[in-house]
Length: 277
Length: 276
Image (cartoon, each protein chain N blue to C red):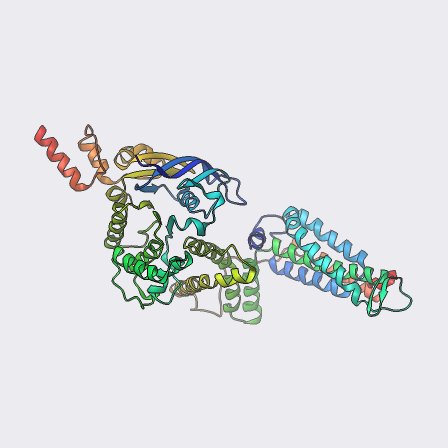
């Protein structure tokens, strides 16, 4: 297993003015190149946790290390070189008059040269499958295009870690799959990807590891197929496993899943089992 | 910003004073704004200020009020006490502590400056007490009901005020999210001089304005689909405001304070000069 690119030790966090810990004694490590889905019901601490990764929040107790560096001593702007964070609502970050300026904003802040910025713009537009005019106004793009533009704007800073907070909110299935496929491509190229989402079907299709948050703690952590098989426990965390796992448990409970399960995968397993039988 | 939002939230708490009619509290507040205009006698000002703190105890907001005013009092009083003595008119019969050319500080000037500071203290205390015991949306609603039913003025105007109060916390939340999004794109808005940081915040305004405009449009559509503007003349209200005995009791304290101030003016004991 690769070295941990993100390390969280005894993390506790309390929002100012609140008496309850939003995060309670969180320990976890994320290795380089992983595709992690962070799931949990609303208020479980998902967004609070990922905001600690890029320094937007600082621990009340405990430590968070990114690439070996303690985030407490680093500003978010400094951590932006390593961690890209895409917010749930792309309209919270779009401000420029043109697509070009929107994408160039982050790299300019990091001091990239003009040449490098132009090459980054070209690269990320291709990576995000954004077939738009560079002089187009971002606000006139569709919701799905604005979401991909938000990812592209962050990607242009060349972060090795990409955090995307609920990327498929308000998106239809086609746009959701398109975006997640693009994120998968980035992961295949070596980016560490962390996605928070409520869409368990997408988690089962794309993530290799699932972390379940419950009441500010890490409740379950493991390979996607192993976590989703623990349906009763997931229910206590307000999560319903994808139907394909529930079906697999009913039809082939004895079979060990070596990888995340898809409907096609289940069909193959059933075929195999019936041939063996 | 957090302290201001906390103050506005405190207005929604529960206590005998919080449950008083907001319009009567508004009149009470007006009384205590007029008092420091009429009176500069420090003894009267201190007594009235202490009285408001007692009311704050009854309303269970004394601690929160203290947290806010402990910062504001020194700033207000300090500024006045440090500057006013230099402007107090010098006359030969004063007890001068310092006197050179046009610059002078006298004992009378210091006493006068303290009285000016206490006027501000009373006004500030009354304002803080009013804001922290009044749900401002409730007040706007109550005023709207009064304006429409008694004066025939459209409810649109108080609704504009209510909408502003209601969406301040949401706008504040959006602002924080947007600045976080820009921080995540390596915009270092936390370092540099005040003007440098202000310049860096310029891009933040655009998504903020965009969100405000979209929200305003959504709200107006939501109101229209619920037939908001169908009947402006005989509008009823979800919450009806009724003045009760305790409202008159609270108002009477304000009226009494005002009456005492007027009496003090008539009896020539309202001015700080009586101590010179």
